[in-house]
Amino acid sequence: MNSQSNSYFSVAHGFAAYLSPWPKEQPLPNDYELRGMLPLGMQLISQVKAMEADCLLQLRHLDDEARTVVDYLKLQSRKIDLVLQHVLEQQPHEGEHCSGLHFGGSGLHLLSPTKLIPGERYRITLHIREALIAILCIGECTRCDDEASEGGFDCELSFIQILDEDVEQLVKASLNIQQKQLQQRKKQQQDPS
Image (cartoon, rainbow, N blue to C red; front, top):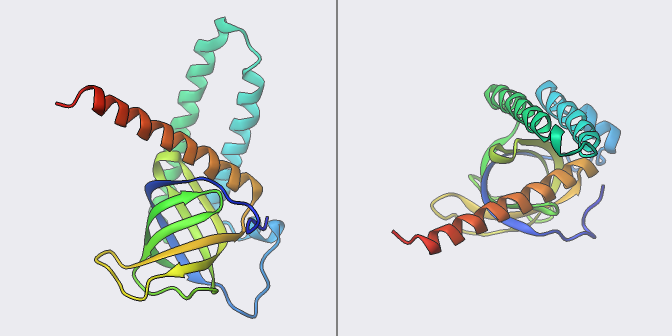
């Protein structure tokens, strides 16, 4: 998917990203090739999430009496996701570790230990622990400060090759995280102790 024409909401939230330059002479991978680039752990998470989505869609048609079973299955699914995420985090990652600041379905805002070059393309492995997301995509640097701050160079990247299901995951995660942030803010305003 080329998402340069799409603009999605972005949420402030910390995450880990690993960037490595995409060779200039190498064409962008198509969806099939991008899937083939996924490490085994990311393939497992992707397959588990796809199976879970199909199953939960079917379970939504059950009546209220089956809600306990649905809730239990969601809990089991979450446990599996957490274990897979932990295993994936323990594996070595290709590229330089960057600290994420914002993410959405269109791209990322992060701090990089080295200066990224606007217009250059990067292979991005993205891990958002709280949303149990691990994706691989290609992004293009759209902005990078000339001066480094305490945390590194302030940079923004737009996705130029990302799977549609990964965009969907990022959009859902950004909305869920924003909802949690708003609920927490509301709770803090009601109970300012």
